[in-house]
Amino acid sequence: MRLDFADERVLAVVAHPDDAELLCAGTLARAREDGAAIGVAVLCRGDKGQPPQPVPRLAAVRRGEMAAAARLLSAELFWGRIPDGTLADDRPARLRLTDIYRRFRPTLVLAHAPEDYHPDHRAASAVAEAASWFCASRGHKTRSPALSASPSLWWMDTLTMSGFEPGFYVDVSGFMAIKERMLACHRSQAARGAASDFSPVLELLRRQASTRGMQAGVAAAEAFRAQHAFKRTRAW
Image 1 (cartoon, rainbow, N blue to C red):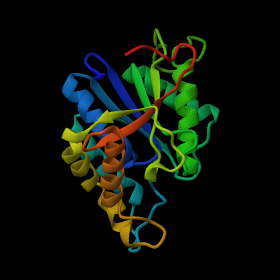
Image 2: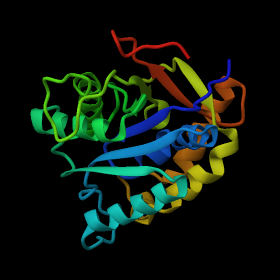
Image 3: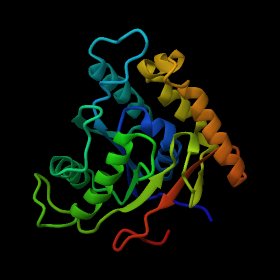
Image 4: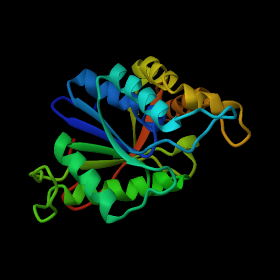
């Protein structure tokens, strides 16, 4: 089976700048090559993950890094602007993401898995799932009109693959270079690699892609699991 993303509109919903690079940038690049419209919604500011040598105005720096990465992918970029560590599945976050969905009009959403290790990731997962339903409900008012149908939803792999059971794999062997170029834009995160409470992100990216690739019989892959929910499941 080969997935074809032609005519799709694919939106990655992530908690922090650099999450998309680590977990789904290869799939986004492959979808773009197929002719899909690509977007990334970053819900948090990225203002708390300081490297050993603190970066002044970290949130602004990370916005710039994320914008540079998105340009490499020709992706439309959306911001939730919620402080790190405070993201919750609440009404303001749902409305904010619902309006982003209505502005971008995705047919497919890629989101953090519910079992992810990071509290912000788990909250982003819940908000992404809720908004995927409410974006097609006319009773939920935002500045933009309701969608005619809810997008499909795929849960993304977890960082280091811990606790995630893949449902399928996307071959990204031909897109590792752009994944790495996008990740290289996030210099403030790369600077955290030497800290005892963090890991070298480029090494994590390469190991994860090659491990999932080995499981799938290709050089590099990204793992996903489809959400099988009423009105959000469709055939490919």
